[in-house]
Structures are given as structure tokens and as C-alpha cells.
Amino acid sequence: MVSRDTIALSGPSITRGEERAVAAVLRSRRLALGPRVAEFERKLARYTGVRHGVAVSSGTAALHLVVRALGIGPGDEVVTTPFSFVASSNCLLYEGAMPVFCDVEPDTFNIDPAAVAAAITPRTRAILAVDVFGHPADWPALRRIARRHGLALVEDSCEALGAALGRRRCGSFGDAAVFAFYPNKQLTTGEGGMIVTNRARLAGLCRSMANQGRRERSGSWLEHVRLGFNYRMSELNAALGLAQFARISTILVRRARVARWYGQELSGIPGIELPRVRPRVRMSWFVYVVRLGPDAPARACVLAGLRSRGIECSDYFRPIHLQPCYRERFGFKPGDFPVAEAVGARTVALPFHAGLGRAEVRRVADALRVALIGPHRGGRTTAGAAGRAGRQRKKRETDSRRPEDGRRRSNGGVQ
Ligand SMILES: Cc1ncc(COP(=O)(O)O)c(C=O)c1O
Figure 1 (cartoon, rainbow, N blue to C red):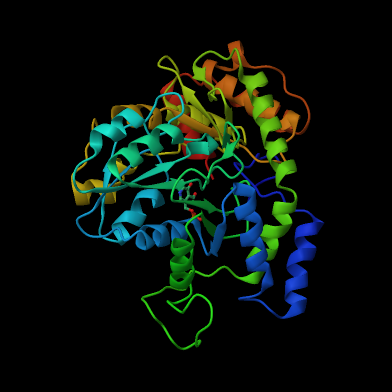
Figure 2 (cartoon, helix red, strand yellow; figure 1 turned 180 degrees about the vertical axis):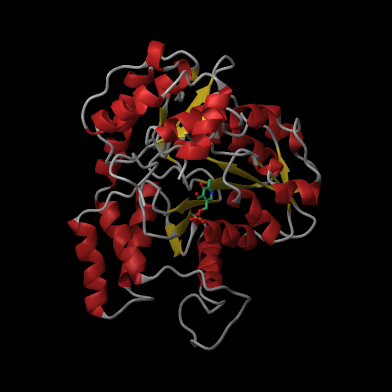
């Protein structure tokens, strides 16, 4: 349970519109395989700038279907990033293919096209890149490489709905792209995902496989023409998605405003680097992640310091190749992808969602300043909701730069 004084790491933006939309589905009694899923697919595909959308039960399911529909399987290699949520690589393992990781760019944390080009072998079938934290990958460069080598290009845009490079939205660069709609995403359906593509056959295959391998259009409910899964999205989820979609520009503008406030409040705090956005990029802010500089206190102390002041925070991403299951299976070790590892070791994700107010952003910034440089030098008197709790806590605080102090608080203060 999040206390009143705690600032949550993320949260969906839900209005009466969403409540009404879901209630209408319940009243209709048509809870699955109905018109809302189809409408959600059409709208999201058009928004992205492609012809087909296939709604499914999660971003992971969407990735799995795309990999399978592309015919990627045992013996195939797919060049991908180690700096991502684990699903962008697991989807390859589901089909027996081998993820070939290559390192990322230090400013955007996205896969480095030069490293991609160097990783291609005769067994490479595809490039699967991720728009990390809502910043578009370098799709023009990745497309050139894919074309030169005759490879499929898959966009994992799970974190980047609405992001654009020039005038083109993420999700429109590759053979297929996927979005995810978990509650921390820009648009949520509770759980859900979507495949978007211009390739009609690929869309049809994904639709069939998501529906137990039934024929895409006509056909008997009990006839299964290929191996399939139940990866369908329900009408309840789609109705929520449609209500969210109707407000997507407002949600994205609000998230961008929160990011701007963070930029203003955090600039000038020594010891951190703020997120960087490249020219021609329209960022779709998924999270707000700062990077600790080399002289900052240990990250565990910073996280513990924030949590002790009621600020939820996290340390994503831990690079995929260093996840225990990948180390055990493939023998990856520290040092394999130094940029991803250096970034992954220094990130601090701060509370971020469309409903965050300026005062809360200020409170997070104050807490971060104290966690970084101590209450005496960094502390600024906070007002409002945090004031009372903060003042009581401050009495107990000593200099948070001392690692032993951070450890003590992390034992006592983390939920
Ligand atoms: C980059 C990326 N890929 C894939 C996924 C998987 O999406 P889901 O959680 O809906 O399965 C996520 C979800 O957070 C993600 O961030």
C-alpha cells in the first residue's frame, strides 16, 4: 500500500471516460471478439502510419508472434540490444533463435548501428531494436543495414507510442513493430499489446496465431489450421485502450511537461546527467531516468535515500546478458557490453506519470539533491504535503553520502 506521502514510481491516467467505456462493455455482455478490438486496431495502426494492427494480450505476446510470423527459428541469429526489458530478447528464445547482443549508444541507450553492422553473420535473420525509454532508435541507419543484408527489421516500440523521428512515428520503420499497454505505459489497456505492420500476410498470420491458429477470416471455430496461442485482447481491454487513445495527445503533452519540470528542477544538481534527446526526435516520455555521474554516491545509497523520503524509484534496466538466466545459459559475463553495463549500473528512475504535479516534481528533486550531496549542502526547505513528514525525517538524518548511512536507511525504509 502506497502511503499518502509516498510519490509513486508510475501510474495510469484514468478518467470517468475510461470508467464509462469499460462499464459499457460489461453492459453489452460482449466481452470478447467484438467490435472494440477491431476499432482499437484500426485507430492505432492509422495513428502509427501503417495499414494493419493486431491487438494481443501483452507486448511480449506481440513480440513472440512477430518473431514466429517472420519464420525465425532454431539456428537463426537476431541482432538485438542488451539494454532493454528482458522480453525483447526472450521472444527469440521462445522460437529457438539466438539473440546476438551488441552494445548501445551512451547518450540515448539505444542500440549502436555500427555495432549492429559488425555483429552480422551469415546466420543473421533480423535486427530487433528497441526505442529505449521512449527515445527512437536510429531507424534510418538500422534500415540501411537491414536492406544491405536482406534482413527483417523489428521495432520493439513498447515504450514509445507517439515517439517520432522527423515526421515519422515509431512503429512505421520496420517490417513490423510492437507496442505494449501495461499500466506504466503511455497508453494502458491493463494488460495488452499490439502488432502494427504494412505487411498484410504477416498481420494475418499473427492474427491467426493469436487466435489458436484459426483461419483469419471465415472458418469454423473448431478448425485450427496452424499451431496457435490464446493471445487475444478482450473487449474490456480494448474499450479501455480506445478511451485512452481518445486522450493520447493530452497524456503525451502532460508527460512531456513533467519531463520539462524535471529538467528545470534537476539542472544544476551536481553528480547527475539528465536524459538527452537528439535533434529531430519527438520523445514519447515513458520514464524519467537520470544517470549518476562518476563522483556521485553509490546508487544503492541514492535509491535508499530517495525511498526513505517517500520517493519510489528504481534502477532499470539491468542489462539482459547479465540476468542470471542468460548468464547461466549462455555464459555472458561482466565486461561483454561495457556501455550497456556502465549505463545500467548508474541509472535512477524517478517517479513519472501524467498526473504528477509540479510540487511533487520539486519534492523528488529536493530528495535527490539531499541523497546526492547531503541535507546540509543540498537540502532546500520543502513545502506542502512532504513538509511535515520531511521535517520529522530530517531530524533523524545524517549525511547521506556515507554509504553505511544509506545501507541503514535501505534496511528500514524500503517497502
Ligand atoms: C522494451 C519492452 N519490450 C517488451 C515489453 C513487454 O511488454 P508486456 O509487459 O506488455 O509483455 C516491455 C514492457 O515493459 C518493454 O518495455
